[in-house]
Length: 201
Image (tube, rainbow, N blue to C red; front, side, top):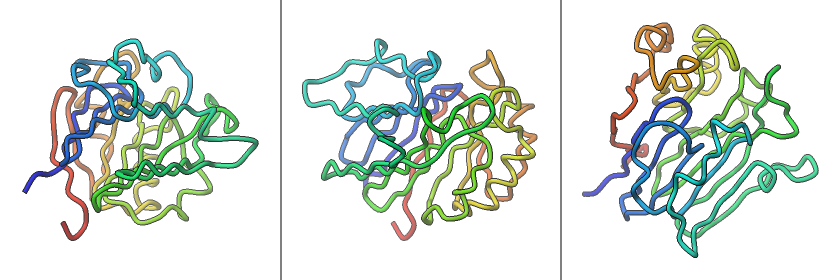
C-alpha cells in the first residue's frame, strides 16, 4: 500500500506527497526538493523565508493559500479541495502578529498534520483537533525555544511531534533539535524523507 511522505527541506519548509501523488508545499524557501509541480501550496505568513513561490512549478490548477486568504476579518477559514481539507488556526508571538500569521491543519486520507507556522504557545492549542503529526518551530529567537515547544507538544497530544525552524540561519541543527524532549518527538534532518501514516491506517 502506498503511503504519504514528507520531505523536510530545512528551516520551516517541507514537501508532502500523498499516496495518490498530490504534492503539497508548506512555507517554501529552504533547501532542495522543489522539482515536483505543486498541487497545493500553503503559506503561513509573508516573511521572505516562508513564501518563496518563485522556487515552485505551479500548474494552472495549483491552489495557493496564503495567510491573507486563510484569515479574513478575524475569521479563520477552511478549504475543501475534495482530496484534502485545510483549516487555518491561530499562530502568533512577539515577532509574528496574530492578524497576519496562521497555522494550518491538513487532513487527507486519514492523516491529520498540524503545520504550526511561526508561533509560540497559543491559547487555542489545547482545543485543536486530534492530530497524527505536529511540526513546531523551536529556534528560540523568532519563535519559542525547545523547552516551550516541548510543553506545546503536551498540549497538542499529536502522535508524533517534529521540531523544525530549529536554528536561525541554518537548515537544521541536530544539537538544537535534541533539546526538544517531548516523548513523542521524531527528529528529522534537512533533506530527510519520512513516511506519514494516519491513525488506524
